[in-house]
Image (cartoon, rainbow, N blue to C red):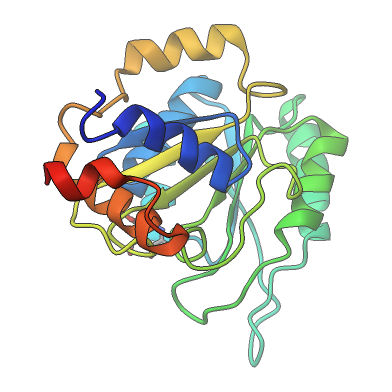
Length: 225
Ligand SMILES: Cc1ncc(COP(=O)(O)O)c(C=O)c1O
Protein backbone atom coordinates (compact mmCIF):
# COMPACT_ATOMS: atom_id res chain seq x y z
CA UNK A 1 0.00 0.00 0.00
CA UNK A 2 1.54 3.35 -1.03
CA UNK A 3 -0.85 5.87 0.44
CA UNK A 4 -0.63 5.99 3.42
CA UNK A 5 2.89 4.62 3.01
CA UNK A 6 2.47 1.41 5.03
CA UNK A 7 5.12 -0.38 3.03
CA UNK A 8 7.72 2.32 3.81
CA UNK A 9 6.60 2.36 7.42
CA UNK A 10 7.22 -1.38 7.79
CA UNK A 11 10.78 -0.89 6.60
CA UNK A 12 11.17 2.15 8.86
CA UNK A 13 10.04 0.24 11.97
CA UNK A 14 12.50 -2.53 11.14
CA UNK A 15 15.28 0.04 10.77
CA UNK A 16 14.18 1.91 13.92
CA UNK A 17 14.53 -1.31 15.96
CA UNK A 18 17.55 -2.54 13.98
CA UNK A 19 15.76 -5.67 12.81
CA UNK A 20 15.37 -7.08 9.29
CA UNK A 21 11.65 -7.47 8.92
CA UNK A 22 8.43 -6.49 10.70
CA UNK A 23 4.95 -7.97 10.69
CA UNK A 24 1.89 -6.41 12.31
CA UNK A 25 -0.36 -8.49 14.51
CA UNK A 26 -3.51 -8.22 16.59
CA UNK A 27 -1.52 -7.25 19.69
CA UNK A 28 1.67 -8.16 21.49
CA UNK A 29 0.01 -11.39 22.68
CA UNK A 30 -0.68 -12.41 19.09
CA UNK A 31 2.95 -11.69 18.15
CA UNK A 32 4.15 -13.95 21.00
CA UNK A 33 1.77 -16.69 20.00
CA UNK A 34 2.82 -16.44 16.35
CA UNK A 35 6.56 -16.51 17.09
CA UNK A 36 6.14 -19.56 19.35
CA UNK A 37 3.92 -21.18 16.75
CA UNK A 38 6.67 -20.73 14.18
CA UNK A 39 9.65 -21.98 16.10
CA UNK A 40 8.22 -24.58 18.51
CA UNK A 41 6.55 -27.95 18.24
CA UNK A 42 3.87 -29.13 20.69
CA UNK A 43 5.43 -30.45 23.89
CA UNK A 44 8.58 -28.33 23.54
CA UNK A 45 9.76 -26.12 26.38
CA UNK A 46 9.77 -22.35 26.57
CA UNK A 47 11.84 -20.55 29.21
CA UNK A 48 10.29 -17.30 30.46
CA UNK A 49 11.21 -14.80 33.14
CA UNK A 50 9.16 -14.98 36.33
CA UNK A 51 7.96 -11.41 35.70
CA UNK A 52 6.40 -12.31 32.36
CA UNK A 53 2.97 -10.93 31.52
CA UNK A 54 0.11 -13.42 31.60
CA UNK A 55 -0.10 -13.20 27.80
CA UNK A 56 3.31 -14.92 27.54
CA UNK A 57 1.81 -17.86 29.42
CA UNK A 58 -1.32 -17.80 27.27
CA UNK A 59 0.82 -17.82 24.10
CA UNK A 60 2.81 -20.79 25.37
CA UNK A 61 -0.28 -22.68 26.56
CA UNK A 62 -2.10 -22.09 23.29
CA UNK A 63 0.90 -23.66 21.54
CA UNK A 64 0.90 -26.57 24.04
CA UNK A 65 4.38 -25.79 25.31
CA UNK A 66 5.85 -26.59 28.70
CA UNK A 67 6.82 -23.49 30.64
CA UNK A 68 9.94 -23.14 32.78
CA UNK A 69 10.48 -19.93 34.73
CA UNK A 70 13.69 -18.07 35.49
CA UNK A 71 13.04 -16.77 39.03
CA UNK A 72 13.50 -13.18 40.15
CA UNK A 73 15.47 -12.44 43.29
CA UNK A 74 12.43 -11.46 45.38
CA UNK A 75 11.86 -8.52 47.68
CA UNK A 76 12.95 -5.73 47.52
CA UNK A 77 14.39 -5.65 43.98
CA UNK A 78 12.59 -8.41 42.05
CA UNK A 79 15.38 -8.61 39.47
CA UNK A 80 15.96 -11.32 36.88
CA UNK A 81 19.52 -12.66 36.86
CA UNK A 82 20.40 -13.32 33.19
CA UNK A 83 22.55 -16.25 34.29
CA UNK A 84 19.30 -17.92 35.37
CA UNK A 85 18.61 -18.52 31.66
CA UNK A 86 21.77 -20.61 31.30
CA UNK A 87 20.87 -22.56 34.44
CA UNK A 88 17.36 -23.29 33.16
CA UNK A 89 18.60 -24.21 29.67
CA UNK A 90 20.86 -26.84 31.19
CA UNK A 91 18.16 -28.13 33.52
CA UNK A 92 15.74 -28.49 30.60
CA UNK A 93 18.35 -30.25 28.48
CA UNK A 94 19.14 -32.64 31.31
CA UNK A 95 15.49 -33.42 31.89
CA UNK A 96 14.19 -33.62 28.32
CA UNK A 97 17.29 -34.38 26.27
CA UNK A 98 17.02 -31.17 24.30
CA UNK A 99 17.35 -27.45 24.82
CA UNK A 100 14.26 -25.25 25.08
CA UNK A 101 12.81 -24.18 21.74
CA UNK A 102 12.64 -20.54 22.69
CA UNK A 103 13.49 -18.13 25.51
CA UNK A 104 11.28 -15.15 26.33
CA UNK A 105 12.30 -12.14 28.38
CA UNK A 106 10.12 -9.21 29.43
CA UNK A 107 12.29 -6.18 28.72
CA UNK A 108 10.44 -3.89 31.13
CA UNK A 109 8.08 -5.79 33.38
CA UNK A 110 4.56 -4.59 34.13
CA UNK A 111 4.71 -5.14 37.90
CA UNK A 112 7.88 -3.37 39.08
CA UNK A 113 9.06 -1.55 35.96
CA UNK A 114 12.47 -3.23 36.17
CA UNK A 115 14.56 -3.07 33.02
CA UNK A 116 16.01 -6.53 32.43
CA UNK A 117 19.51 -7.02 31.05
CA UNK A 118 18.33 -8.10 27.60
CA UNK A 119 21.78 -7.96 26.04
CA UNK A 120 23.20 -10.41 28.55
CA UNK A 121 20.25 -12.76 28.08
CA UNK A 122 20.72 -12.40 24.31
CA UNK A 123 24.38 -13.37 24.62
CA UNK A 124 23.46 -16.45 26.65
CA UNK A 125 20.78 -17.48 24.13
CA UNK A 126 23.26 -17.04 21.30
CA UNK A 127 25.83 -19.16 23.12
CA UNK A 128 23.30 -21.99 23.59
CA UNK A 129 21.65 -21.55 20.19
CA UNK A 130 18.24 -20.95 21.75
CA UNK A 131 16.04 -18.47 19.81
CA UNK A 132 15.40 -15.32 21.82
CA UNK A 133 12.10 -13.41 21.90
CA UNK A 134 12.18 -10.09 23.74
CA UNK A 135 8.86 -8.62 24.87
CA UNK A 136 9.24 -4.88 24.36
CA UNK A 137 5.63 -3.89 25.15
CA UNK A 138 6.95 -1.25 27.58
CA UNK A 139 10.23 -0.37 25.88
CA UNK A 140 10.31 -0.18 22.08
CA UNK A 141 8.76 3.08 20.99
CA UNK A 142 9.78 4.98 24.13
CA UNK A 143 13.36 3.91 24.77
CA UNK A 144 16.18 2.77 22.49
CA UNK A 145 15.87 -0.87 21.41
CA UNK A 146 18.56 -2.16 19.07
CA UNK A 147 17.62 -5.73 18.21
CA UNK A 148 20.98 -6.70 16.78
CA UNK A 149 22.94 -5.24 19.68
CA UNK A 150 20.69 -7.16 22.09
CA UNK A 151 21.17 -10.41 20.08
CA UNK A 152 17.44 -10.98 19.79
CA UNK A 153 15.91 -13.17 17.10
CA UNK A 154 12.41 -11.79 17.59
CA UNK A 155 10.85 -8.80 19.26
CA UNK A 156 7.22 -8.30 20.11
CA UNK A 157 5.48 -5.16 21.22
CA UNK A 158 2.22 -3.37 21.54
CA UNK A 159 1.34 -0.40 19.33
CA UNK A 160 -1.34 0.74 21.79
CA UNK A 161 1.20 1.01 24.59
CA UNK A 162 4.60 2.55 23.88
CA UNK A 163 3.62 3.78 20.41
CA UNK A 164 0.48 5.63 21.46
CA UNK A 165 -1.55 3.97 18.68
CA UNK A 166 -5.16 2.89 18.91
CA UNK A 167 -5.83 -0.74 19.90
CA UNK A 168 -5.44 -3.47 18.99
CA UNK A 169 -2.12 -3.64 17.27
CA UNK A 170 1.09 -5.48 17.93
CA UNK A 171 4.26 -5.90 15.98
CA UNK A 172 6.69 -8.67 15.51
CA UNK A 173 10.08 -7.69 14.15
CA UNK A 174 12.49 -10.48 13.38
CA UNK A 175 15.97 -11.05 12.14
CA UNK A 176 16.47 -13.08 9.03
CA UNK A 177 19.51 -14.94 10.28
CA UNK A 178 19.63 -17.37 13.18
CA UNK A 179 16.21 -18.46 14.31
CA UNK A 180 14.16 -16.76 11.60
CA UNK A 181 15.05 -19.13 8.80
CA UNK A 182 13.41 -19.84 5.49
CA UNK A 183 11.18 -22.68 6.58
CA UNK A 184 10.13 -20.64 9.57
CA UNK A 185 9.05 -17.85 7.29
CA UNK A 186 6.93 -20.26 5.30
CA UNK A 187 5.17 -21.05 8.54
CA UNK A 188 4.77 -17.36 9.21
CA UNK A 189 3.04 -16.98 5.88
CA UNK A 190 0.75 -19.87 6.80
CA UNK A 191 -0.12 -18.21 10.08
CA UNK A 192 -1.22 -15.24 8.06
CA UNK A 193 0.02 -12.78 10.61
CA UNK A 194 0.52 -10.09 8.01
CA UNK A 195 -2.37 -8.10 9.29
CA UNK A 196 -1.65 -4.93 7.34
CA UNK A 197 -5.03 -4.89 5.68
CA UNK A 198 -7.04 -5.51 8.84
CA UNK A 199 -5.00 -3.19 10.98
CA UNK A 200 -5.02 -0.16 8.73
CA UNK A 201 -6.16 2.53 11.14
CA UNK A 202 -3.95 1.29 14.00
CA UNK A 203 -0.94 1.17 11.70
CA UNK A 204 -1.59 4.73 10.60
CA UNK A 205 -1.59 5.78 14.27
CA UNK A 206 1.72 4.01 14.83
CA UNK A 207 2.99 5.63 11.70
CA UNK A 208 1.94 9.04 13.00
CA UNK A 209 3.83 8.32 16.23
CA UNK A 210 7.07 7.53 14.40
CA UNK A 211 6.39 10.48 12.14
CA UNK A 212 6.16 12.84 15.13
CA UNK A 213 9.25 11.34 16.74
CA UNK A 214 11.37 11.65 13.62
CA UNK A 215 10.06 14.83 12.08
CA UNK A 216 7.81 14.88 9.06
CA UNK A 217 9.24 12.18 6.85
CA UNK A 218 5.77 11.11 5.76
CA UNK A 219 4.57 14.22 3.94
CA UNK A 220 2.00 12.11 2.19
CA UNK A 221 0.17 11.47 5.47
CA UNK A 222 -0.75 15.06 6.07
CA UNK A 223 -2.32 15.32 2.65
CA UNK A 224 -4.07 11.94 2.64
CA UNK A 225 -5.43 11.46 6.19
C1 LIG B 1 4.43 -6.64 29.49
C2 LIG B 1 3.21 -6.87 28.62
N1 LIG B 1 3.32 -7.66 27.55
C3 LIG B 1 2.26 -7.88 26.74
C4 LIG B 1 1.04 -7.32 26.99
C5 LIG B 1 -0.11 -7.61 26.06
O1 LIG B 1 -0.21 -6.63 25.06
P1 LIG B 1 -1.36 -6.66 23.96
O2 LIG B 1 -2.57 -6.06 24.59
O3 LIG B 1 -0.83 -5.81 22.83
O4 LIG B 1 -1.58 -8.05 23.54
C6 LIG B 1 0.88 -6.49 28.09
C7 LIG B 1 -0.43 -5.88 28.35
O5 LIG B 1 -0.65 -5.19 29.32
C8 LIG B 1 2.00 -6.27 28.93
O6 LIG B 1 1.88 -5.50 30.03
